Length: 232
Image (cartoon, rainbow, N blue to C red; front, side, top):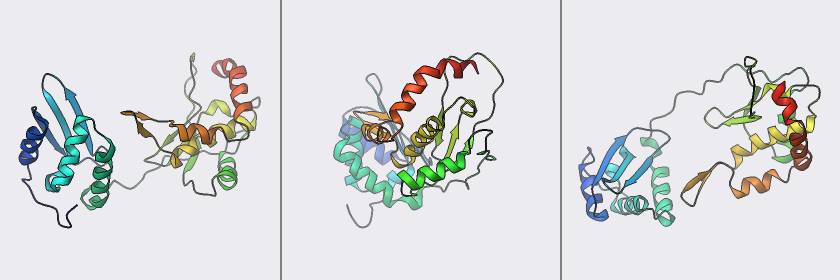
């Protein structure tokens, strides 16, 4: 990759024309100032390729443009590495995000102290590498439930939420710990693109999750008591 990037037209017309020549199909390019979705490609047989790309690509060197064309075709191997390296080098062109604003945290439940559980898990299993906040989720109005999401991890806020229905006397602590452990893993093993699709729980995640000592007891408890939780 050249030390100094080549400069092309700022409106993306040169990039569009170059891609049409490389892909031998109609191409539309929309330049964005997005902080998270740097490249988005849609392939439509009737109308060609539709790309939404960060404006940094207007001044990219031809090597990066070639990788972008390969990525548009669906050849993601080496193309992803080239594009990833370029994006990393151009971080100064990405609009900074607003300061992180956290909701009010409520980690202390009636039966379980989530902050204590989180800290103990972090020390014991993660060498204190996880940096997140944790809270019980808000209590929702009483209504029939068909499913329940025990926990969630917000990567932007670095926030773990645990469903308030787990703060009950009949729920064993090891089950709450297993849910917190699962959500903590999301920070260390983020989603990955596998076979052209995003996987929230890639193989490495599943393997790490199953190393938790109470993984199997927690799974069995969930099968046995899920109906009771849904009626809570």
